[in-house]
Amino acid sequence: MQRGVGLVIAALTILFCGCASHSSSQSRAAKRADEDAARLTASKWLKLVDDGDYEEAFEWEAQDFRMSRTQKQFVRYMQARRQPFGHTLSRKFIGAASIQKLVGLPDGNYESIIFKTVFEHKSATAERVILVKQPVGWRVIDYRLY
Image (cartoon, rainbow, N blue to C red; front, top):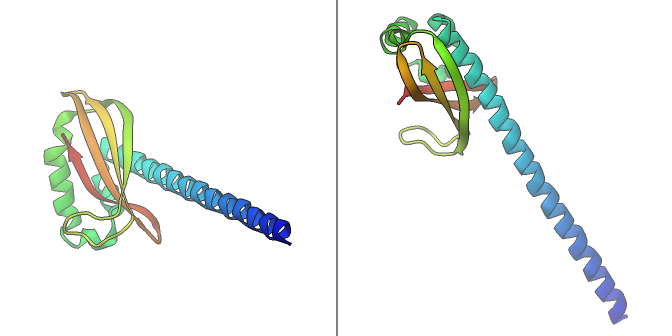
């Protein structure tokens, strides 16, 4: 009887551990899929910015964050901030970080994507694109050059 109970406990332990490791690998896989999707969106958005298509880049911004400025304001900002650097000569993915909390923003599913970029009129610099996951997909909420 004790041997039977011991076998049942051992079987349940193995089953539980297997399920726990399976769920953690699923969460790692889901995290990786989120990072890849956010990185792809950031790259597409940066291509629009590289091409000077600031109007379309504005459309890729998160709807609730667009309320803080108009499309014309965004275009003027990008023309003043990004255009002087000239053409993009190279861009290399450096890393990504999943973030749940950002100062001044509601808790959410954010990704910070960092690239090392060389421009025609600027030496190597870091570009950071922060995105938020929304029902329609990943949307840009912030862009910085360092």
